Length: 173
Length: 120
Image (cartoon, rainbow over all chains, first blue to last red; front, side, top):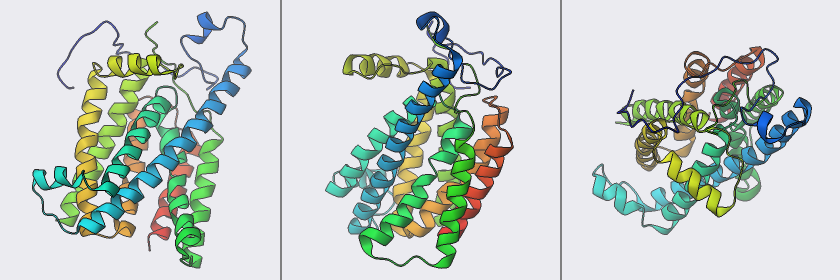
């Protein structure tokens, strides 16, 4: 446990998952009154798809820009000053900007979706990285790589079939 | 040096993701995305101890990643960062009390195997 700050907005208890395994938000009952559970689940699923897409694209492009910049800089040593100095290189700065977008959308996604859902579905980024190497850089993809892409896609599809949220959120209102 | 960085990267990312998920669940679903609402959410989250812990861990993770890609190829750095998949799924089940059904376990396993294949 880190140092406590104890504001009234913090709720520490985690409620057990609801029996149906459906997405249930603590605020939905009061805010949207008569909206049925199926509509609520569909809304959450659409929102989850959109945010997952932004998280994946910002992460892949951010890491690529960052890596490209660090390669151009070469071995800079381990000193904290050198690492901070690297942030001012244009490619590294672009990578950082994209990773800030990734951080904000990833946090928003985790505010309603499970970590054990978000983590596997955002693994689609590995496939995107491999395919962008093929289409943007003209690299060939070996049979082994195709097999890996197939396995990842199958895994992402399987996890994508589960409900994004299995624990009731502890909303502050 | 390379493997020490991998150890730091995997540990910091796991801690960062789990603490972030915990903090965001205590915050509740983010429903509005206009600038004023985002500003309010960021200010509230800046006082959330789980989010603070997560941000510190993610900073360590970020600097170990950029250090790693400067001494090792991307084809090494990216797949090793996927090593967080299994420990994070276990922590999501035990610490975050998520319902990890067989589809999520199987999916995580398939993805881990796939990442090993595309990194060779």
